[in-house]
Length: 303
Image (cartoon, rainbow, N blue to C red):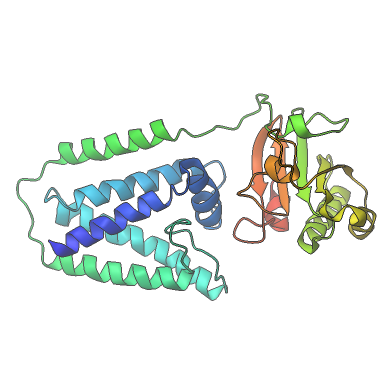
C-alpha cells in the first residue's frame, strides 16, 4: 500500500506541477511549448493533448489507490505512459539538451537526465506492484470510465482550449502598437527586441532572410526597449533591413500599462517573436530556452 500511495502522490504532483504557477501559463508555456511541441505535436493538437495527459495523471493518482482494474488497466497504463515520455527524454539527452524538461513544470525544474532517472525508478516500482497485485474479480468498468470522463470533462471545463481560426480577434498587443499597419488584419509578425541583444539580432536577421525568399511574407513590426535605443541603427544594419518599429521605456512605475516590460509580460523574455493571423496568436516564441525562436520551425508555418 505504501508504494501505491507514493506513486499516487507522484502522479498528483506531476499533474499539479504542470499547472504551476498559473494554470494557463503552466499548461501552455511550460508543458505544451516546452515538452509537447518539441516532441512533434502540432500547435493545434498540443492544447487538447496536454489537457488529456494531465487528466490521465489525475485519474491514475486516484485510481491507483483503488483495486478496480488495478492490474488489468491502471498499472499497464501508468507504465506505458511513463515509458513513452522516457523515450523522448532519451532523445533529449543524446541531443545535448540540459534545459528543464517540463515533467514537473516550473515547480520542480528537472533536466532530461534527472527526469529519466526518476522515470526509471517509478517504472521499477510499478513493475514490482504489478507482479505483486492479484486480479480483482469484482472490477467495474463503468465506474472506472465515469471517473476518467468526469476528470477529463472537468479539465476542459476549467481550462477551455482557445481555438484559433480565421475569424478576427483583437490582439491584446494591438492597442500598444504605433504603426500604420493593423495588427488585427491579415498576417503580421510582432517582435519585442533589445537593439543590443545578439539573440534578437539573429532572430531579426532570420526574418529578413525569410522575407526575401518567401512570397507574401507577413509585415514585421518591432517594439524596442529604450535600454539600448542608441544601437537601433546598428541593429538594422546587421539584419539587412529596416522594419517598422517603435521605442518604449523599459519600465514605468506609474499605474498605467505603457512600458516594454509590462506589455510583453513579466513571464516572457527577449527575443519575443509573435506570429498573428487576423489578431489570432498563432505562435509565440520567447527567450533562449525551450521556447526560443526556431528559424526552421517558424519557416514551416509558411510552407
